Image (tube, rainbow, N blue to C red):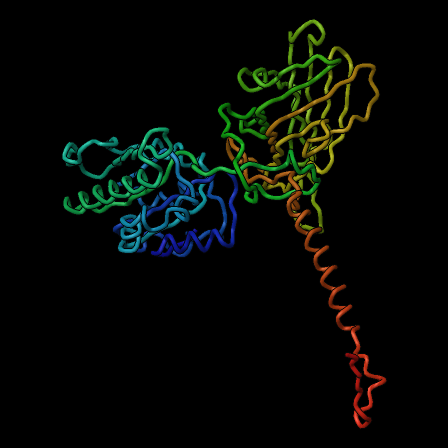
Length: 445
C-alpha cells in the first residue's frame, strides 16, 4: 500500500521489488477530506489485503461522505504498467489533487467482488450504468453512487486500452458532476476480478522446492467456479478448506471422477476433525458404482512449531483412500507451508509429472492411483471461507534457468581456458643478438 499522489510511479516501483499472490485486484481510493487515513493505516509493502482489512480502511469514509464506487469487470496491476499514463490521466489527476488518497496494489478479489453489497448496507444507493447520462441521477443526500464502468475484456471492440481510457473519462465526468453539486465524496476504483493472471509451472518443473504463487510467470489457474469444500468446527466457522479443479482416482484401471461429488454436491464429512495441532478431512462417497460402492478419501494434516524459522508450519502428512474395505495410504513429499498460508500445487498425485508426489506405503492386490489438479488446502489460521496467501509446490529453478546456467558455465569455462592459453604465450627471442650482424639471405636469379 502506498499513500502517495503519483500512483503510477508508486505501482511501478512496487512491481519492481515485490510480487503478489494470484487473484489480486488493485484498488484506488481518494477523498475530498484531508487526513482521512493516518499513519496507522499503513500496511507492509507487498501485503495482500483481505476483506476485513479493506473494510477497516473504508470504514472512516462511511460516516458523512457520499461514496462513489467505480466498478469495472477486470483490472490488474499490469494494466497500469502496460498502458501507463495514456489510459489513466484523469485518475492520476484526481489522486494528485485530492485531500487524501490510498493506493492498494494488491487486494484479494474475494474482498472486491462483494464490495458493492457491503458499502450499500444502510445507505441510499443510486446506480449509474455504462452509457447512462449523468443528468438522470437524482440530487440525493449522503449515500452510495455505484458507477458500473464499461467492460474491458470482451471479444468486441474497443480494445483494452481504449476501454480503459473511456472508463477514465467516465470517472472524470462523474467527479466533476460531484464537484458542481458541491458534494464531499470518497471515491473507490476497483474491479470484480483480475485481468492479468498467472499459471503455476509445477507440472512441468517436477521439482520439490516451493515458491509463493506471486512468482508464477504465465497464466493463473482458473478462478474457482465452485466454492471450496469447507468443514466447520463446533462454532460453525470453517477450519478446513479444500479445493481442486479435478479429482481422479483410478482403481484397477477404472477411473472415478470425484470433482462434482466433492464440490457440486454436499459430501459427507462427518468423520473430519480439527484443532490447533492436527486436522483430518474425511470425505465419504457412496453409491459410486458396483466396484466401489463406498469410498472414503482422507487428508491428514499436522501443525508444528519449527525453531529454525520461528513459526508454525503445517504439513499434509498422509492421504488415504478406503474403498470396499481396502485401505491405501499415500505418503507425501514436502507438502507443507507456513501456518498463515495455504498450500497449493498444480498437480498432486502419484503421477511422475506431479509437482508433489504421492507414494503408496501399503501393498494392495489392486493398483490404485490418485490425481488432484489445481490442488489447494488449508487447515489452520483460517479467516472466513476463503484461502489465505498461498505457498506453491513449484521449484525455484525452471528448466530454462537450468539450461541458461549450464550454457553460461560452459562459456565461462571456454573463456577461462582461452585466457589461460594467451597468458602462457612467450616470445621466441633466445637466439637473437641485437649487437651481431644482420642476417642476410642471398636470392638466386
